[in-house]
Structure formats: C-alpha cells, structure tokens
Image 1 (tube, rainbow, N blue to C red):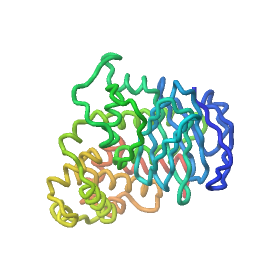
Image 2: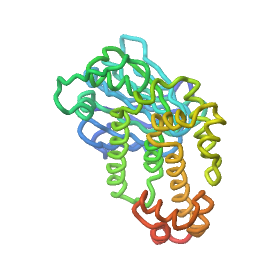
Image 3: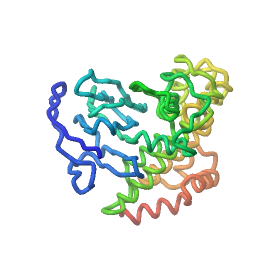
Image 4: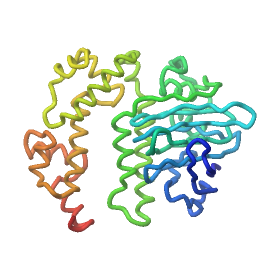
Length: 341
C-alpha cells in the first residue's frame, strides 16, 4: 500500500498538502493530484494543474514500485530514497518520460525545477509489471536481454527478465501516442462528478496499453542504436512539422534539412513515435482540428484547410477514422454539452 505526504521543501520554499493515503480514494484530499487504481498492482497519479509543489511518496521497503514519470511541461527532479543509503536522483524534462526503480527504497520525491511542472505517473509493483509483460510464467526468461542502461526499454526488459539487480533512472523521448493520451487525461473534457473516475480508468488503461506495447516492440532493434546526433535531428524534424502543419516540406526536403536520409528519418520516427513521419503529422493535424472544433469559432471547412487537409471530405474521413464520429457531429455534441461560448 502506497501513501504520500508533503512538507516544506528547503530548496523551493513550497509546501504541499498532506499527509494523504493512496487508498481509499476518499482520503485523497490533495486538490492538485488525483490517484486512480488501473488494475491490481498498477496506479495512475495525475497532477491536475501545473505546480511548483513537491510530492513525496512513502512505501515499505519490500514494495518499492517501478515508477514511470511523464512530464508534459516544466522540469522535475526525481529522488528515490533509503534511510541508510544516499538517494538515487534523476531528472525528467518537458515532453520526456523516465522510468525509475530502486529496490528497497522507502520514498520518492518529485520536485519542480525551473518553474512549474505538469506531471503524471504510473506506479507498478514489480510483480504486476512482470505479469503484464511476460504472462507465460513467473520464471520466464527471454533470450534477447540487452545490456541494461542503453534506454528505458532495455532497463524495463531487463527488469522483467530478472536481470536488473541494481537501481536505475532512465529518461527518454515521450512518444506521440503516449503524449496524446496524457494530454487527454489532463484535459479531461466533458466530464463531471462520477464520470471522471470512469474516464481516468479508461484513459489509464489506454496509457498502460500504449506504454507496454512500446516496451514490447521490436522496432527499436530494427532501427538500430540511435545516436545522440540522430535523436537531435529527429527532434528538430518533429519541431519543423509542428510549426508547418498546414504546409510541411516533403519527406526528402525534411530529411535534408536535418541531415538524414528519408529512410533513416522514417526509421527514427517509428522507433520514437511508433509511426512514420507523415503518420505523426496526420495525428497532430487531427489533434489540432479536434481542439479547433471544440473552440467552435470556425466551421468544419475552415478547420480542415487550416489544419492542412486537402479537402473537407478528406478531413471528415480521417477524423471519423481517428475519433469514431464525424467532425460536425463532434462539434455539435460539444456545443450541446458545454453551451454557447
């Protein structure tokens, strides 16, 4: 059973509310955080608003969780502590995620650095993580175990394989499918009262699925080892796409701008975002279009062209495929639920 409490942070001078128990939910009195059990041994922690507060988890030494931290904005310092040993610390920055595990740790602190942070976390018992990623038997061992420390994925694979004996904290780029789910969780649209719990359970399971699918993927091995220069080039290409969604460069032009071949750029996007370059662009266009429809100041046709779709009918087909509803119906439903803006 986990619990968390807070106290004045000597480095920031901020104070969190507490003490608070993870379970039952009725005892969770901190207005800035929401905790939800996703399934046995797996919990989702959601920070409702950006904050400079420091959150401290406490747990028994024999139940130290595997902790996934997702940072949507700001920067945070993660610290896993034991009473009799120095703390294991690490950082997680905006649009990154980190995986931490310290056997025998008794508490974890998440402290804001350089302004406010927007964070979410998944907490796994090691047994739950092993059951989910390797359900065949408790003693199963894979034969493709990679050396620990090269990435978040290899650290988790080695933990599941029983090859991790020491602590680790590893940071990596936040893939697009995870980022989209996280943004939907913190936005929590159209929900009131008890429906929020249903929404968090549903989206928490989606986050759990996407995260474990990422670690179970063979795409990283197929793409080969990603160098720091390639990672920087892929991040630059991603930024270029976001700033030119309506009229992006061609794949070859984009690859040339960042110093890669178009084949390698697509490989990197598949490894980092689980989609091709223009698959990622399509998802970002649809995400932008959904938010514009909710704003209700533009027609479906205007939204389609401003988000870079060739025709309104092309936009409608893509929106229906992604969200399961026609854009006009989605916009009207949002208006009926929220009233005129």
